[in-house]
Every structure is written in structure tokens, then in C-alpha cells.
Image (cartoon, rainbow, N blue to C red; front, side):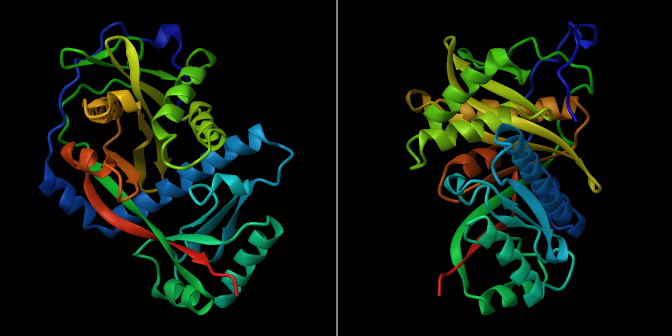
Length: 317
């Protein structure tokens, strides 16, 4: 778990940012390993668990939580307006056979929370998962692309006590600043995040809530891309450890509309990869919808498509 560095722990020297190489052969070999698939899935479960834990702190009187379900699955139940990004089940079928009883129990949890069951299914889940879901009227709703990258090829000095106080320069007018979450930056992060996402159809309240969960996570570093001193975009990096190893998850990337097309997200990705390697991490992930440009930017920075998850939602009878 990441804590804000104390003054005594901050070093005054910060390695200059370098452009990560795009070793696609290394990434391809990595993604062919079954352990890597489980590493990615466990990190996704841990990531969403920590998001929901923040919601539990923010809304202690609401019926918010997460619950283990059959064969490695975890169901996340929050407020209906937060949508499937939060209210879904991960990991179903990753530890073997999925039974009808497993799905009956899962659906009962959702009935109690007044939520429609949605399963974000990994293509490497046991075949019984898809068969059981089809039998119970689950239908295809959407897709989520999962990108991953080895960081072994990034040449920066490992420094677990690195400073976050100095900006990183990318090109003549782009800088990236970063900091562990604190009250001084939370409002700026939320404002910029909402500005970049508000044209995707979700309400401002939902977008602000999602940004706030990132800003309040103790395992997360916040990143600000700035052009000519103005915040042009933001992103976050969660530093997590699973039984398969460490993973740096890059998430909630948002570019202010007036700064799109100027390399903001690429700079934010590059800064986080360099920092992750400096902090001793050798593996990174990004999740995104197939229809947005994040995947293309991730591939430019050396990520490969590990697999695509399907969102399956129970159809009303």
C-alpha cells in the first residue's frame, strides 16, 4: 500500500524521464502465459475492491459492498447510478466449475440490492461459466479491452523513495506533475477528470464520484498533464500486489477537450511507466472500451492487448 512520502524520505534528485521502448515481442511472450492472465484478473479484482472500499467509507449508510461468489468470482454492489463499471462481477469461473447454484446466489445478492446482475467475464474462465450464464438468460452487453505491458525494458534507476515534487518534461510545452492524493489536489483532479469525461453520457455526479474514489485511494498516485501551465489532462496509477506479483494499473485517464490531439495521454502514460519502474514494478495494465483512443495510445507506449472481456447482463423475463 502506498503512503504519501514524508519529507525525510524524499530525495532531491529525480531521474530524467525517458521514453519507454516498445518491445512488442517481449509483451507478446508475456501475454501468452497463463500465470499472466491470472495476474491481470487478480489485479482487476483488487483494483475494483479498493474502489468500492472508498465508496463504503464515503457512503457508510448505503448498502455498498462486495461479496465472494462461485469459482473465484466477486460481486460488487454499490449505487445503481454508478453503472456497470462498478456494479459487476469479476473473476467468475477463474477457479473452476460454475454451477447454477452459484448464479442463483449471485442473483439473490443483486435482488437484495435492487441491481441487475452483470458479469464481466474473462475469456479464460472455465467453459461452464458461459454455458451457465446462457442458460439463465444472460446476454452480451459490451466489451472491455485489457492491455498489459512488461516494464523490464524501461531503463530507469530503481528508487523506492523517489521524489514526487519535481515535474517531468515531455516536449517543449508539456509537463507532468504527480502527487499522492491530498486535499490540496483532490478538487483540481476531480474537476479536470469530469471535464474530460462529461461528453460520454454519464452524469457529472457519477463522474465526480469515480474521480473522488481515485483521489482518496492510498495506493494511488495522481498525475496532471499541463500545457503552458494549464491542466490539460489527468490520470492515476494504482500500485498493487497480488499473489502473482506486483502490478501498476493505469486508470481514469481524462483529457480536457480543448487540449485533445496534443499528446497529453501519451505523456501521462509514459510518466507513469517510468515511475512504476523506478518504484520497483515490472508489470502494468490499462483497461479501456474498444471504441476510444486509449488503446491506440497504450499500444504506442508498448502495451499489448492481453484479451477482451465481455459484459453479460441478465435479461428480464
